Length: 229
Image (cartoon, rainbow, N blue to C red; front, side, top):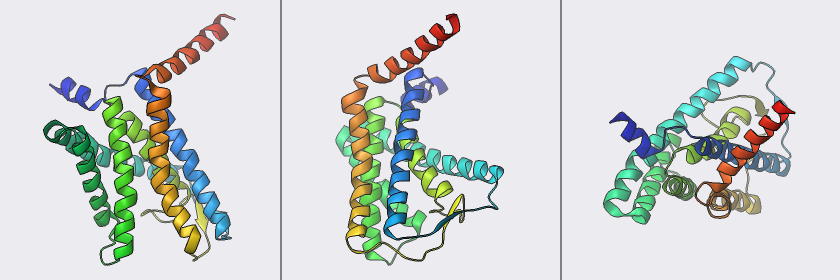
């Protein structure tokens, strides 16, 4: 029974799923770094390394971030999405779970009363939820959405200190906020990035797992050649 549940959520580890997690994590980590560096430059902000930040603190913060992501993925993709797709169909299930995922962030961000922020948060997290849901539906596994989600949140929270944990690895000394065109660029970057990366992998590279499997086979072949060489 437990094995069936793991299989339903795609939690049993395989080579392909492991690589999907790595690809998702690395790609979103990279684009999150680009995002924050771009706007640090736009704001002309001074960013310093937190000299009091230790490796144990980084590990603890990373683990907290991963736990929060696992909770969200298991709840909104692993439970709600699976049930919604079963009873409502794939597309309706994806949009329902994504809408609820967006509303959930109103509570986690505690933004009630700020209508523009409420709307922006619903759009950004809702679109992100759609991308995560499609990643799960197409791969039949939580590994890719977890990797994508973890890549963005780890850089956001533990590297650039933009989260509930306070000062982390890098600390900005500016109180400036994005406005005007930069605010629009930030908004569209966030709502376009995740669906684009997800689509790029699912539609161009994945092809029923051929892409990830071939990468693993290449890595394994190179190791064998190197070992025997």
